[in-house]
Amino acid sequence: MPETVDIVQGAVLYAENCAACHGANLEGQPDWQVPGDDGVLPAPPHDATGHTWHHTDALLFNYTALGGREMMARLGVEFNSGMPGMADTLSEQEIWDILAFIQSTWPERQRVGQAERTQAELSAQGEN
Image 1 (cartoon, rainbow, N blue to C red):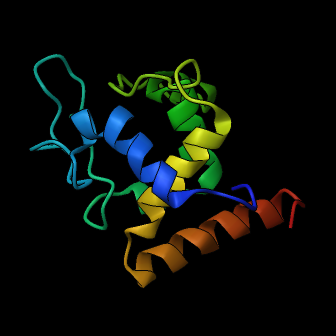
Image 2 (tube, rainbow, N blue to C red):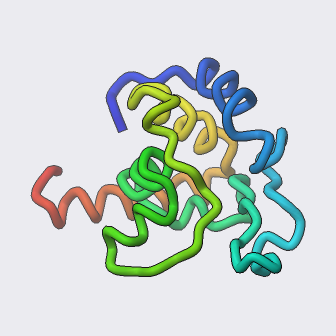
């Protein structure tokens, strides 16, 4: 994550670009863990009840920028994701601002756990 993020702007951008699917209160869509008739999972919650906080900053950024299907394909996984790529709609900074807003809503336990995963990934890559 960049050194400077704007959580307030992230909240505005989330409301404009993400809330229609992920919920105004980050609650996700009903039955988000059960694929629909089209095989696509509904949008997950981004609050502490979901799995967003299990993922590193890099994965969250790339999943948002590239879209779910493309991101998973780059990992060698075929996945019918409903998440569109947002790189044509949002700047990198705007994506980071949205992610910072989402993270700011998590309880301390989830924030710390996610930060530790991110740091471990960076350390493994030699990026400190």
